[in-house]
Amino acid sequence: MITLLNDNFSQLNDFLHGKSFSKIFILVDENTHEYCLPVLLGNMETDLGFEILEIEAGEEMKNIQTVNQLWEILTEMQADRKALIINLGGGVITDMGGFVASTYKRGIQFINIPTTLLAMCDASIGGKTGIDLMNYKNMVGTFTFPEQIFIYPKFLETLPFKELRSGFAEMLKHGLIADKNHWENLIQINKLDVEGIIPHIQASINVKQYVVEKDFHEKNLRKTLNFGHTIGHAIESLFLNQGNPILHGEAVAMGMISEAHLAFLKGLLSEEDSRLIIENIQKYYPYLDISDFKDDDIFALLINDKKNTDQKINFSLLSRIGFCEFDHQCDHKNIIKTLKFYRK
Ligand code: NAD
Ligand code: ZN
Image (cartoon, rainbow, N blue to C red; front, side, top):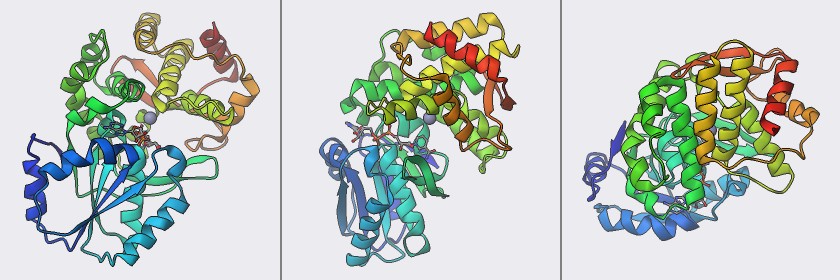
């Protein structure tokens, strides 16, 4: 269940009072410790003891070493099966905290309180937990739902602008794949800021929740959430390998532009819709200079994409604004043309 929290966090307190937990562990990173934890502790009412588990911020922490440390701390602090983990943070915290909770003692309860836009609209919902392995993202994980997800949009007030804009890409994606009205509302926002975005968070959550409910194990409809992510992930990895990481949403924005053009080349999307999509995404995101990356390097990553089957590159492509189809295989020729189009 997903709940928008009141300023006094009453729904969270009702939840805590209604259950018999033995102890609470609050997982934060250094930033959510500073900006979000005081708000949570100022409002949380519980007679239970709680401990704060803090990790350094960043994707580099989302690995088995950190998980191991967390498992050990839980053991040392005698967390039993009735302990509750509260994940207070962005997607790194909700993914990893969910993974720790779903594996420690074969699973203890956890709730997510996402603090980034990306986590509110995407990462904290949908029941995927996980960590990275070697250079591969989200290679190890579980499908486990939190007990509850509590959203407090005012946490966004301290979020750096680039992080906000990164999360906004997933909102645009939700509109494009399933809710034209949502997309049209979003592109009315001229200056991206928290005030402008907050009223649209619920619509974005609704899309993600609907899709996940229909297809939890990503056999069909859930694949549409990968729109923009096939080319986007490849570009994200190349920037990372170059030692010049970009944010996930920046890569997804580039991926959505490219894949809108690809859908047009394939004859699936009209030129008019493709142009509208590209122009509007460009309003918010600066051009990514991908001239350093060779087509072959991009292909090598596209071929390796987790979502592929039978050695074929699978795309989720739009047929209209608000409609997305999955498992589209595209010609090499069209992918090359698309990359050329973006480079221009
Ligand atoms: P993140 O958790 O690293 O947060 C981004 C930055 O913002 C961090 O530095 C963090 O400390 C800081 N921060 C968080 N909340 C803040 C606040 N309120 N004020 C100030 N600073 C704050 O990254 P993210 O973008 O939230 O999430 C990315 C992760 O989510 C990736 O690991 C990705 O794989 C994962 N993800 C998972 C799913 C899923 O379905 N499970 C979906 C999408 C993404
Ligand atoms: Zn994404």
